[in-house]
Structures are given as structure tokens and as C-alpha cells.
Length: 123
Image (cartoon, rainbow, N blue to C red; front, top):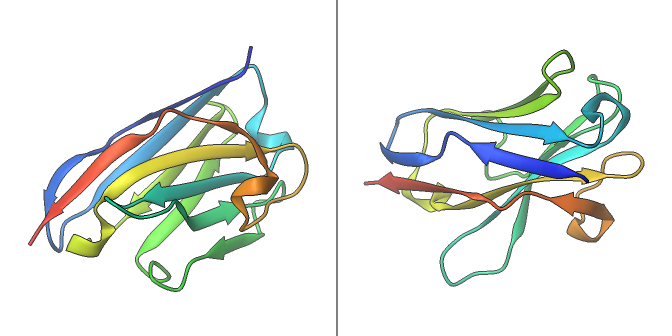
């Protein structure tokens, strides 16, 4: 059974940092494209970032580029999202997801999803 479990969310002041973790079981993150998506309150879920099976391939939404970094620890079978210079607009539920092939910016490419973790940025 595949499980993706996010952690690390919380309340932070604008300008602060958080690191989200996505611990996987039932699949190997090094063999899959992995992504982070978020759903702001009252809005649809949106792409944040993704990493391909090769760690050299990454993609970021324009709104987070330069502030967020996706990474992967294959030994821990975990994917991370380092979020710096947080803004009130980053407030959302953040979801980790895994594809069956290469990475994608489309949520429809992802077969497995975590339950999400809340990030709230106070201004």
C-alpha cells in the first residue's frame, strides 16, 4: 500500500521559513517524479514544484521560483520542500504527490497523493 505522509507545516510570520517533508512508503521516490502542489483557501489546487527521477530536473511555479527548493533524500525515501521568504499568499494546504513516470506540472499526471499539511503565513 502506497502512503505519502507530509509533515512540517504550521504557522509562520511573513519572511520566515519552513521545511516540509514527504515520507513515502510502498514506493521508491528515486524511481518516480515527485511534486508539491498547494490549495489556497477558497481556490483550486495549483502546481508548486516537481523533481524528476534525475535530481537535476526540477520545475517551479513562477510565484515560488527563487524562494522554494525541492529536494530528495533517497536513503530516507523522503522528499522535501524548503520554503524561504514566505508570504501571506503562500498560505495553503500543501500536498505531496508521486507520478508513475517522469515529473509533470499537471496534477492529473500524479497517481499518489498525501493528505496535505497546512501552512499559514501571517502578515
